[in-house]
Length: 107
Length: 100
Image (cartoon, rainbow over all chains, first blue to last red; front, side):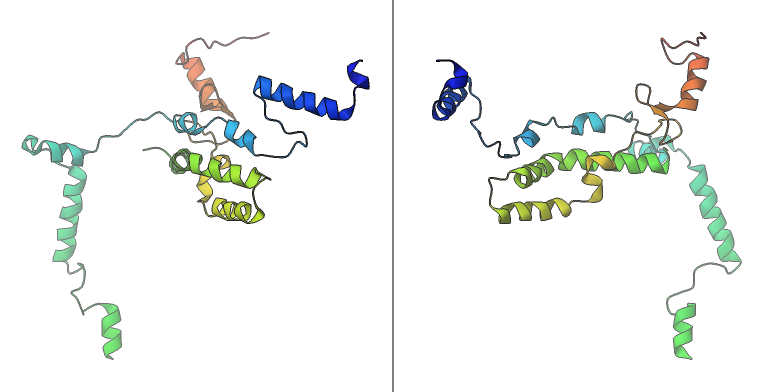
């Protein structure tokens, strides 16, 4: 008896047994079990390593770690100087209750 | 400091990497037709609740030099013009100009 003339019931049984022997999942209807998603490779590590991991060291970090070096942040220094200059000219921030909004309410 | 677009892409990559395992678990639940419909619907809602950067499609390879998002050669991670400049400078090992 060749395989093509075998009854359908026997063929399904054969399929079932062969699945059990070879460790395959017996799924004759081809139901979607979502196993293909579990089989997918995780892309996270490769995707995360696209850009070179270059950490920029900030001057502030150096001064925090080694304050004895007495490094001067020129940008911060000029900013503070400009601020004090503006304050001298009366352009500093208004005191609490002296701003535009609070004076509008009083009127 | 890298370009803003590159920083945005870095952020997306970090989000994808961190949420990938949980997202795939929910994706498995939605794709499994043997599960009850309610569970699958809830898994779909959970998937929607992820930030938009959590999708792998939010990632776009960008040029390391310029941050350009188009015409980026994957092997060199550079856009075509930066690739040409660097290749002519001899900064890319094994790359040489040829004519035929």
